[in-house]
Image 1 (spheres, rainbow, N blue to C red):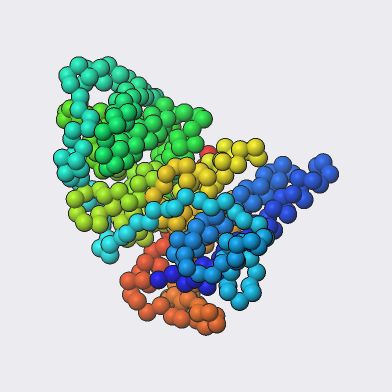
Image 2 (cartoon, one colour):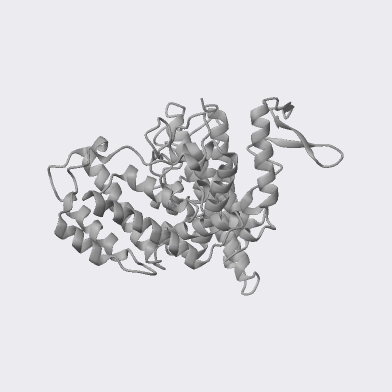
Length: 429
């Protein structure tokens, strides 16, 4: 159960930081020419943007988890905003709310990426009758497949058109329409990524996650490797359609996507797979609770990589696309625009880490090794970690005694230390 007072305090804190960052950015913009370096002004702008993104997500958490808590009465300038019920302040400015964020459930049993198996059949998804391809259509799909960069762009467009045509059918059930809309989104984005579309935020973000995920593991991550993995995903999808004569379910598409890049040739892992951000809740097999998010959350190494490389990708995407006249390209808007299934608390961690990386905070995009979710290491005289503690509301130290938790924290500490601000992946182009 979430702590209302803590969540409310986070909203108040973020409102204060938004106002502070806005004032700093405004002062720098209005200062005499050459008072500040352009990179410093840009940094202030990014800071303002990321604080606004933090505020929107914490307000969304408060709205969804504490809908019955007191708010300022309607008719006041602060009407509708949360209050502590005892005369505590509420901001005199509201922030745009964000769409509800789907949260993911995870099971307790950790799994490795080697457990990836193909999901249940399409007949179990109720989609077998939706999109079937005759021999003439399969021959046309074969003709659309090319080679090299963008090898599968035309074939993606062909499948995308078939999905759009099917969506015009007024007799579709709600479940069928939802499945087809998910396919339409995936095929559109897959085409942009395979073409390496320079104007696509989705392409830039996914390629950044892929490249940084490989570099995070000290593996080659050149453009050829990233394009090769994109082509392998396309090959899996087209092979499936041509062999079965039908469009696979989204569950099967995502499992194939993951399979094609996490094997020995793809050399990626789930924590550095671009699809993890979008498809956190997607099942990867018929095992109950076996989702993308489950496997990442239950593997400390993959979880640290996931937060790190997605934070770097988000920061790079905002740097590239956000302009003052295009507020829809803000950090929070990019997160929402990618239809991400990642739970709100993890989105907030990614945004926080992105801002830390931009500002050069301890650990950079890899995170502070001395503060892991509120836990702090104890050291012996040789600077080796010998224990962990947290603090209660009175700042009293509380030792961690759970052996599994200690092992998890030790693993995450070592990763943050080894992948910190001096590791090459943090500064790679």
